[in-house]
Image (cartoon, rainbow, N blue to C red; front, side, top):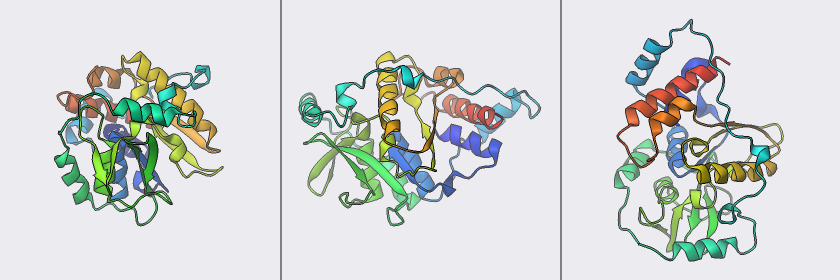
Length: 268
């Protein structure tokens, strides 16, 4: 996501810090906090250099990634269907079993603190899941529990059974992706708004996750009367990411592939 946004900014002369709102889920909450904190997304000099060597300025424009046919998805899986009666209880029951890890993301927390992002101006929204009730909480939205951006991001990134839940005001929260991979419907968008959705899980070899993400996006788009553009990883980005999203080894290649995809999309 960071590489893609950097490539789009460089290619189309955009500044995503000017967006009206930032909605983040899981790893996307880190990206949202970066932008809300006034920082531009950076893929690094290596990514730009590799793009320049592979695609000089006079190269033909690449076609935008095809993505998936959202209209062809007929059903949203129950565990991602936030409005299905009883779904919250099912999520809570599923989260109550299995291992309870102690692993935390202190380095991520330190990064978010240094960004200085705040909920004060109302632009930042971070989705997480109340572990005990199985319901979504969007920190930063009107009526949501008070939280620091650091704690909200850590909660949104707390993948169940891998990272420890994050406690905020006595309640435990986990990854907002348990509710939805995108939480598009949490965007405070009006009829004339333009919404850009980065959906990394629409790519890769995980057929079930692709289908679930597509189904969630299809349902959530109906809740918005806005112009929505969904960006999925292209083939090169998929190859760079590989099958293990928790593996940090390919990071330089992923940043370079994302940057190149952004630059290619900026030409179209």
